[in-house]
Image (cartoon, rainbow, N blue to C red; front, side):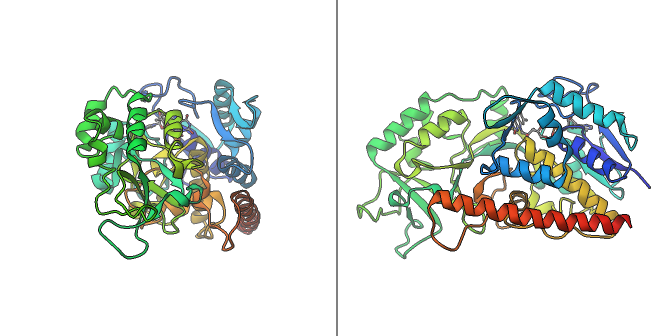
Length: 444
Ligand SMILES: Cc1cc2nc3c(=O)[nH]c(=O)nc-3n(C[C@H](O)[C@H](O)[C@H](O)COP(=O)(O)OP(=O)(O)OC[C@H]3O[C@@H](n4cnc5c(N)ncnc54)[C@H](O)[C@@H]3O)c2cc1C
C-alpha cells in the first residue's frame, strides 16, 4: 500500500497520522521544523500549542466541550493524550504543553506505520493521497504552490474579522430587521440603533480599548485598503464611524419612528440565520475588551459571540468554493486539507479536521464514501459551514451553538441549549455506531 503523505506535524497533521496508522495505513509525515520555523512555533516538537495551553471547556454543555466529547467518542488520539497531559484549570481542558507534545511525539515515533521526514514540502503529487495540514503559518513555498492549484482568490492571507453573534442571544426588544430605504416589513439586516449618547460612549470605549499590536500592520492596511478596523476609523474622527459602517441613513427605528443616530448592522452568516455577522466591524481590539464594549449595548447585553473580531496573519482556503466531498479539494479529490488552513478555527477543531480527513481517506481507499455527518452534531455543524456556499465573505469558524439547528418550539435559552446538546449526543452516538460497523465490514 502506498503511504499517505501528511504535510505538517502540527495538531491536525499529528492526529491525521496517528488515525491513519491506527487503521493500518502507512504514513509519511513531513515537518519542516526545526530547519524552517514558523513565526509562532518555538520548538521542533509535534502538536506544539502556539499560544494558550487550553483546548477549551471540558463540559459537554459548552460548544468546545461538546466537540471534545465528539472527538473522544469517535476515537481521536490527541484529545486522549491531552487528558493525560492535563493540568488543573477548572472546567477547561488545559495541558502541560511540553508533556502534551512529548506524548504526541512518542506515539508518532513509536508507531511502525509512521515515517517522519524533517523536510519542507514545496509541492506534491496531486494524484496521491495527501493531507495538507500545514497550518495558518505555512511556508511561502507551499502557499505559492497552493495558490497555483486553487487560484489566489481562493486562498486568504489575512483575517480581518468582524464579530459574529449567536442570533438567539440578541435582545430583539432593542433591534429591528430592515433594509435601508425599504418600507416593507422585515429585511435582510438586523439593525441595532444607538442614541447619540450611546454612540459617543461606544467611540470612547473603542478608543480606550486595548489592541493587539501587529508589527505588520502597514502591510495589512495596504492589503485591506477600504476594510479598516473600527478602532482605526474611530481614530480618524469621532463621527467617522457614524458616516462609515454605523451610518443610519435610510433606516427608521420602529420604536421611535425616527432615524437612529447610529446603527450597528448585522447580516445572516449562514442559511438558517442562527449566526449574525456585524457588518464592517472588523477589529483588532482585545477579545476581553470587545466583549465588555459590545455588551454595554442593550441589544447585546447577553450576546454570545461565535467569533470575535481579529486581525492577524492567517492563511486559509475559501472552503465553500474549493472543498468537495468531506475535506478533499474539488480540483484534486485525493488531496485533503485539514486544520486551520481548511477554514476551521481553534486547536480542537484542527485536531478534529485531521481525524476526519484521515478517516475519509481510509474509507475512500476502500471505495466507500463516509455517510453525511449528522447536522445536529458540533462537527457536523462545522462541516456544513465549511461547505455552505451561501456564506458571504468566508472566515474560519470554531465550535458554537449557532452552528446547530434550533428546536421548532419556542423555548427559553437554557432549555434550547439542553435540547441542542441532547440532539447532538444522540445523533453522534448513532453516527459513531454506523462508522464502527463500516470499519468492521472493511476489515472482514
Ligand atoms: C499566533 C497564533 C495563535 C493561536 N492561538 C490559539 C489559541 O490560543 N487557541 C486556539 O484554540 N487556537 C489558536 N490558534 C489557531 C489554531 O488553533 C492554531 O493555529 C493551531 O495550531 C492550528 O493547528 P494546525 O494543525 O492547523 O496547524 P499547526 O499546529 O500550525 O501545524 C502546522 C505544521 O505544519 C508545519 N509546516 C508548515 N509549512 C510546512 C511545509 N511547507 N512543509 C512541512 N511542514 C510545514 C509547521 O511547522 C507546523 O508544525 C492560533 C493561531 C495562531 C497563528
